[in-house]
Length: 221
Image (cartoon, rainbow, N blue to C red; front, side, top):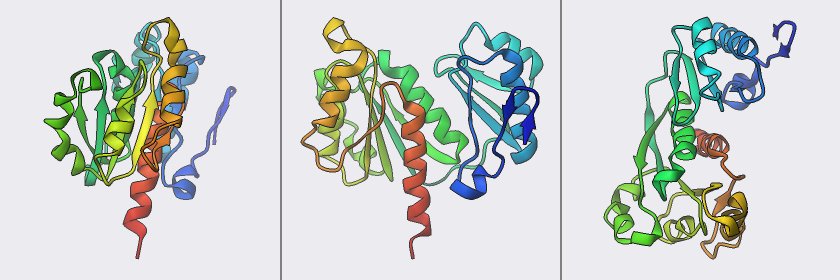
């Protein structure tokens, strides 16, 4: 499937992998973004894009006035979202500064048809905030934990829940955080067994990993 002259799209990805191609908007022109979203929506009934910078969004929305843009997560959707089903995913955010990455995960999950419950600003600096919500978090089928600074929250959550936990390091933090590297290394060295870690600021990747886990769970005999 071609969005000439700039892109060759993959409409068979939905059948092949269980989720459609999603447009990574950063570095693309407004025309490339709008062309690709329109072509994918024509193929699937809806389309989704990530990392659409706020300064480029008005031009894209002018070409696609029916689209919805979320400036916090920098995501854009076109067409109707599917009805949410299943146990759902808890998106746990350590601090308010981590919200853009957590939002990217949550918006992606909603596009993929999952029930999403968001838990904001419950990092380890005030551990009582996590304890107050832990029973709700335990009800989820998968837990995504987003944290910057030293990246401690996923280890704590990983020791308290039975569901798969996907950790997302963010680039939030002062100099020694090294743009999220400290959080990434802390999560990779977690003592919470079975913790899965994605790349820095990759809320999208965490959402797709959660989608794959839940999809396989529904196919189990």
